[in-house]
Image 1: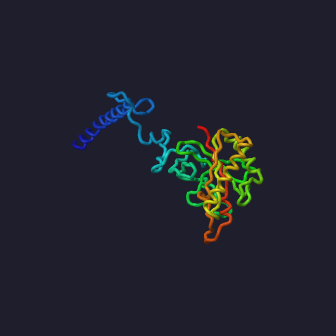
Image 2: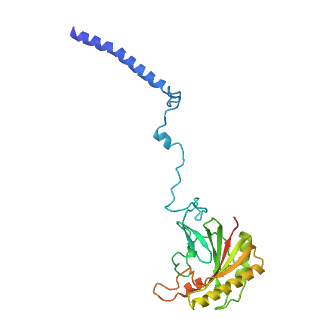
Length: 270
């Protein structure tokens, strides 16, 4: 008889267990809407928070990366990666030319003719892709600390002047430069800057660079350059772009020639 009683008790437990399962399932379903998502809280009326996985798949963009210490937000996308390049410093290049320096310069100009840039050379700045056919030089791009857009056309003095002279020989480079300025950078201010190599005395170099800058200034204004003002400054050999000595200590003829140059600093209107 005892085995029969144990069997009857077990049989009685089965309906009770099934009923408990059904009640539990009903309670769970009551806590979800028809889409299977958490229903509103009966006390607050707000939806339960989504899971971490739901948040990660919501398509929200990551916040922008923080700037390097001391950096300022960028104003221009120099390297074309879709992000404006922050600047980490300013640098004084003499005669009132102070520029913001990008934290990283991914498309810096390369030195030419196996020359080596001096530390913090102006020539390391990036430049736009501009057709310079007929111009023996290049264009750099930067901003002033106040955010004014600056373009710097730099070309070799040897294309304009004989050694030690401030008289223009061929005008091809200047004529083509005027065309570029009037087409792309009109109505700005222009500062003509003359530079020499480091041979000779500092005073002689200063005088020659000033005379050459003034000669170019006069040519620009008399041949239709579109600018609100054109000034000139001579810097002698104080602002070299490249080293004038090779790694073995010998004189670099290419380096000296590269430093003999004229720069046109074009500040565009805001």
